[in-house]
Image 1 (cartoon, rainbow, N blue to C red):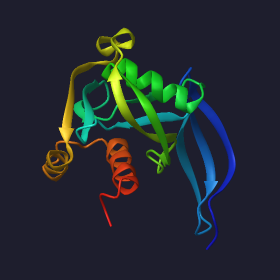
Image 2 (image 1 turned 180 degrees about the horizontal axis):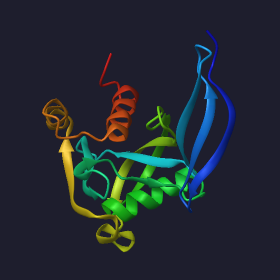
Image 3 (image 1 turned 60 degrees about the vertical axis):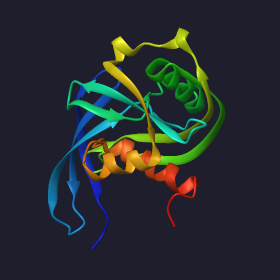
Amino acid sequence: MGAWRRVDGRVVHENAWIVVHDDEVVRPDGSPGLYGVVEVRHPAVFVVALTSDDEVVLVRCDRYTTGEGWEVPAGGSDGDDLLDAARRELGEEAGLRAGRWTDLGPVTSLNGIARAHGRVFLAQDLAPDPGAVEQAVEGISEVRRVPWPELLGMLARGEVADGETLAALMLAAVALGRVA
């Protein structure tokens, strides 16, 4: 058995955010195949914002692709520095700024079909940033501060289903010593 190998390919669609490839490949077992890949042009950022009362800030977001759901503030970096992008997203989506930032590490999304890299940040020492809010444009209908025990209940009930949010919350839980 070997690794995946690209033999040839072509771009079938591209825009400012993504490039879609149809690649001819050799599979690990040596057989030929076709693989469709979505390549995201710029990494995304995910912000786990933690209040001084140990609450996590979630946003209720209406996504064109999946409908409404609870998420951490997040978005594309648009080629900006990732911490600057995280600051921007926290302001736009939650109307907050943070005095302390911790880089929690990388994540990848939909790795079976996409090259979509991201970075998770923990934001603490929160304060209002009402001038930056763009919730209507982002499809955000509600910003909620959820205590950790209640958040765990939401997770257990399937009320938070966004994979990137789940990954970000897990990285934050590990960094904060919430899991062994």
